[in-house]
Image (cartoon, rainbow, N blue to C red; front, side):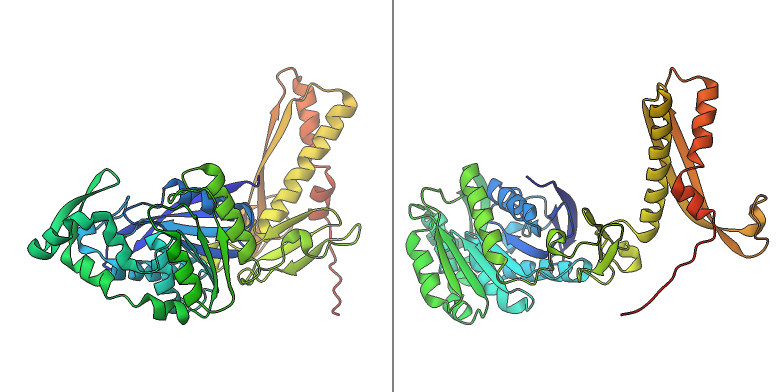
Length: 409
């Protein structure tokens, strides 16, 4: 399983409230971004949402999942929301991704969230693929969850209902809003690839809803049965399966830069650098056997998908320093446990450097701190290790005249 990471963030929802969100990121640069809408009265942290997002992140797809207004850790009053406000929150989430990362190419919705992404898709032009999980064809289907209170809601304007063991206030405007939705028109005009996932035994949203969605949609469209899964995908295996299927299916429809493993490698003894297309500055850096990504931080207009060029320069010096000291210690059989090298780079005035040949202007200063872990080392052995550090090949290169010969092809 690839290493992934998750970041907490927030953005302003459609009604002006601060919405809590989580961005699940792959170990390397994302090949695409997805937006996940959770089920009715659920939250971004429900098991299905977190597990599916993790599965997508393992495939290189970053996923933004968030709590709709008034739910989970988001601000606002649930009683003031409705299906239309949920759709508007989705559009606000897409705008946040568009501004600070990349617009989502994949929209994923669970249960009523599935109906919401179908409705929102037309207003997120970058989205090319939509996946629904246990989604109702008609958003008004959700009123079945509080059918016994409908008369009270119509008479008194609102009612407190029990949903999943928690009390929620449902107002007449919510019921009126879901009943006026024209989902058939939205699905027929989707103009995006559609994947419908549904469990035949779903006792919350029946399988006939999947059939209606599928028949209303135009190609390309696909249907996947979730077999014995329950509506909330409570079993880890079911949630993981759904995530793996969505990730594999989406690869056909999103613009994904080649993964580093499929990009060209350098010839032995050379380094190859090539733009990835993932943002304005990201670079694929390869030797004949290893790859990594270089980028600039967000503050400089990059996407922070890898170390900066100066980070790599410092890394080369630090690695060479530690390797040279280790090689000497091993040859001399010195009791050296570990070497740690910390480096930073900045520009300083030449007048601040008494040992430098340059007398005017600014020069590059690399500050290096070497930690030598070896309690049994003598003072003389430590001094020798520090002396050896300055003899590492990269250190010598930085202190010698360097000629960069350039040709274009």
